[in-house]
Image 1 (cartoon, rainbow, N blue to C red):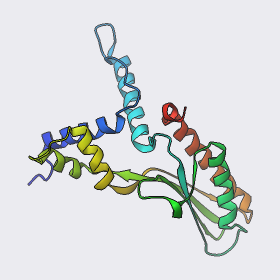
Image 2: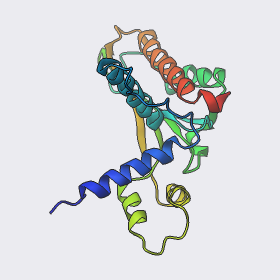
Image 3: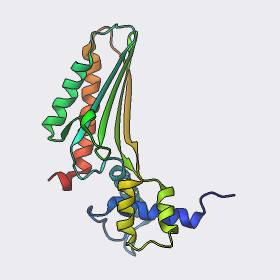
Length: 210
């Protein structure tokens, strides 16, 4: 038996995307018209989908970002501490004016940037995860099926996102490398990924941040 009937799934997904993009800048007019060729239309559609994916991943109305830093250094081949990583990352968040504090002070609704570094011998891994509250399609389907629903759909989904949501990473990046015993190589990789996050976050949230 199909657990997610096609029509209901499509409706739920459409409503979810509409809610996520509510209040954001509207898309341009029709992608295709009599004067637009197919290639231009497909390029426009691809750009629109990329923009939608970016907003789903990073849109947060430019609220402060809380920070979690973790370090696993099995062989201690590199002289690196959690404090050094946190200083490098936190200073960049402060410079961008989006630092909210340590993750221990975050509420369940605050976005958290988790930075993890693992060192094994002369190899290292750096991972970034942007964790936010998300609402599942199952929850939206339940909203659509509720015969006693009185609020408009947008308001009902808003309430569901506040009370029936869970936390999950919406943006993730990672890199592998070798450090040759120099912790500076690792910190450089952390800084590069941090800059990438800030650039993408500020781009997606530009309207709210301004």
